Image 1 (cartoon, rainbow, N blue to C red):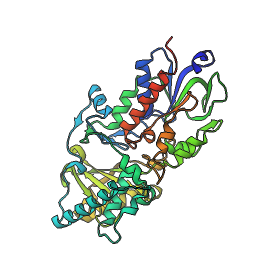
Image 2 (spheres, rainbow, N blue to C red; image 1 turned 30 degrees about the vertical axis):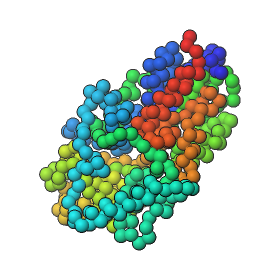
Image 3 (spheres, helix red, strand yellow; image 1 turned 90 degrees about the horizontal axis):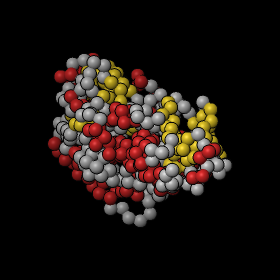
Image 4 (cartoon, one colour; image 1 turned 180 degrees about the vertical axis):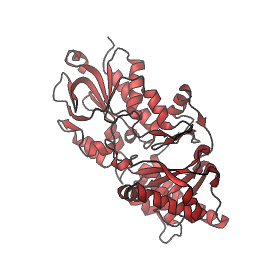
Length: 420
């Protein structure tokens, strides 16, 4: 027990990473253990992690470059928090919950829905050893391209890399899915403001060789803590960007098999908002997996929200902003004609794979790796704790899954020491 070692530590708890899990844990600890000193360290210059809202010039809308939907909104902790912060919930149906779709040939729509539904039924009825999502495709099915696109949006990776067992464990809670008009990232940023935090501090090494304290080595010097909570992404852990001394190979190996998929967004401003229908969804192509999905004028804003995932997102990110714009403009032109291209300009763009200290979007499990989420979440030596969306068995890839793991870790920490 580290309860008798506080004289050797400057902070009781150091939390590494100011995303959803880190912010949630800090809030929880402040509430249940006000006697403990807490410090949140974040390598970036902002709070929120993979929740990041940027403003639309001259507008009231937030553009979410990261997570944007309150999945399982009725029991999603961030829904209540958004209300407490005075932010505006939008309850318009999501595209997958009956939201407005761009009109297509009715027969094709029906055939595609039948094929997609049958595919997901095959996933959900899977029994036996784990396999990848591609194993459930029907060879030669006309709609396999569209199924592949949808699969990449779900996991951020190609079907061949993702676990069926992990897919079937996913449960975000009761829907529907809602949005926050001012942005999901705005919710986290505002919620994190009361937490003692240092931004722009990169943690490089966690030295847990001594019983009396843990050394947290950063690019701004060394801190000593009684306990450390690590909430960084699996790609950061797997790459060894934070070294553990002695090594925690079980954690880094688990992280490597729970990598981050990639989903990037491009927001295109519309010169004439009336050129496109409001809050309407369309798929760039219904015949290939390498396609974007587009929300036309989300929340009525004068923008198009383009979403790219998996290998396509990696290829476009490497090619640069001009290539991303050209790809999206080509797909929109194919639907609306050449004149639409003249309406478009880049308002905001993400590049999560290249984002320092994150390196991707949300975790997926390789076949056979789903149980490693529990391995990743397990504390080490009662002093080093872990949280984040990848630690959630059923709500991985979501901000509220990260929140729940942060709260659970905070409760474990709070129970580690008697109150003074």
